[in-house]
Length: 137
Image (cartoon, rainbow, N blue to C red; front, side, top):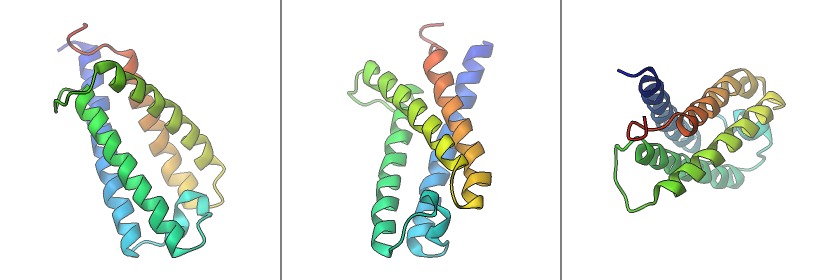
């Protein structure tokens, strides 16, 4: 198998795993089993804020799962490939900025645990946009 295709498959697989785990994690936070003080830079103050932010996070992670699945041809929807590619570039930017935000979080758990995760996500998204899919190799 072509080395570039293997890197793409690994990147897509890691992203699907991370986003699936993230949805589960944010659902656990909403359930109250994990304190919401460890997310969002430790800046959420009320239960209502947490519900709003965690719901948005679950929605975004679901969209990210769909984008990666579309790019990897695991699912087919009537969405143009250029929309998928632009969304991947946006994801590179968002997760790069999120990595910087995690570095400056007031919560040490967020800094030590989520900084490497968001960095890997940003790099995997970058791999998907820079390495052509198998149709283009």
